[in-house]
Image (cartoon, rainbow, N blue to C red; front, side, top):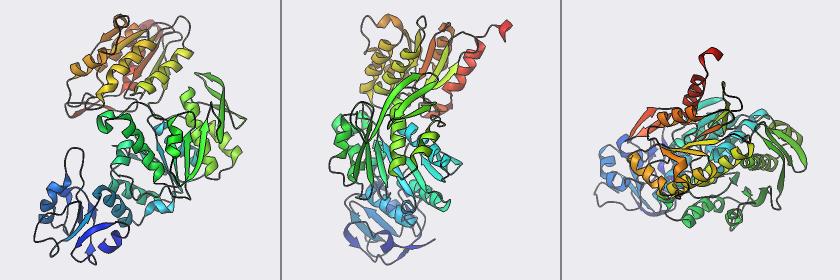
Length: 496
């Protein structure tokens, strides 16, 4: 496949052009190691390395054009190789990748979902809903990517720009009419979704997370807002009216503004009638809905899904009926009755921020039996926001009867150091209810041994993940499978 370089640059504002852009190229990429003769190499400044350092190597491998924020002084540029200087090469990469694949996101209704918590569940529910309504849909998210019913393994919440546009092209070719994409703050800041033509964007909420990357909460919030600032006048912006940052997201957007909420005035209004481990009974725009999902946080997710469906012109009664059949994303409040202890439960949840953990534990405490205890197994990831570690520990200790601090994905950090930082969040009164077991398998096993009738064991932080990353190596690890196995092993032999 060959495209004219000038066509790929159609929407890229160039500051300097050296060489003839009316030349054919055979691909676009940002990995200098993968450059093949005839391709365009885009030098992107990444978190851990700067692509500008590899421009000469890319040219040695046969790159036909270089896109960079600063071109090197090399005699080949302008003669053998076309050089284009741009203000933001990451933005240029997304725009050129979209052009290379024929602007696939223009061929379906693309909805971006952003926020600290709820992105995965909301995107998953939307994919389920519109599939039930008879559409062929695409999903881009943390747990998995889907092209219709075909599942593609997900490695990032939002893929890199070239991979994303390639995925969009597969979705368009498969006849997808609606695509739902989790839009992480990293992806927005790194311009991975540049070139994506959004039909709408959803804001779920904003709480403490990713300050290792964004440094301040204001910077984190401002990056989320960029998604709404980028919307066109024919798109819609749908925000959580009960989150104070919802109004901020709507400032300056050119899109049609809409709100959903439980507590304040909104375009799409909800009211919880009953909230139990059997599910939610809620009013949505004054119409009753029984849903399988549990917790107030899922009431918000359902409202967001309903709002999107309405804004995309779906039939109200068909949507309300379909909402009752939706199931949550894997690893989000996965609830398992204990097979051998009366009233006892095991729950696996992805909660890895203070706010998410607090919401899950508050929901659990709302449902637990009077004599039951809450036993929480939780850790914090390495090479991530260190400031949330003591906050996570404090939330766990405040809302649990017994806490076991353990490893999450320590990555390159020492697990003991992470656990020490977590313990700093505990008061003198909270310390006695907390124990530290670095080995996650042993921690889960210990929680199950402590569990009695009516007790609820929460294993938080990893949810759907099927691995544990330690010192750069990913080892097979599944919280849900381990918890189920340990609860089964706790059944007395005579009762099996």
